[in-house]
Length: 129
View 1 (cartoon, rainbow, N blue to C red):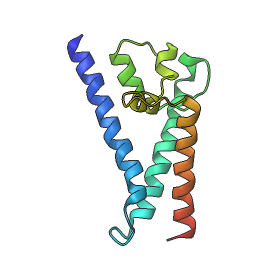
View 2 (tube, rainbow, N blue to C red):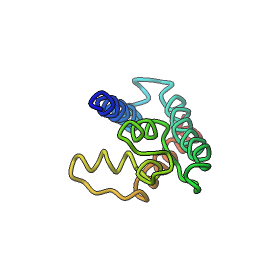
View 3 (tube, helix red, strand yellow):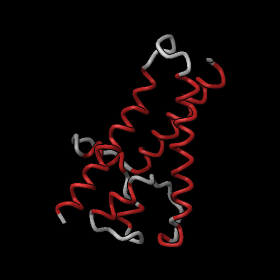
């Protein structure tokens, strides 16, 4: 059980690094990385699209659609939550991440934040490159 929890914690921190990189790209000047806008756009599309796809693939177990990160599912399974358990598919990584800092974030706000970044990155990609 300890090893499973260690793996779950490892996935959590890998998730943190990916999200920090994703958000951090907003602050990297294009003069430092000329292809940053295109990379960030496609990286963001991958992040958002895979959540839709993974949520769709989980529907037979969850009986509803919700955007779910593919890293959240193994993390929650390692913690002992079944696929059909709302703690798995209703779990918000961003909510957990912010919760560790003492900030309360709703699932809705996490989704809004995701789509806000998608919007910003799309504007950069289509209008500023």
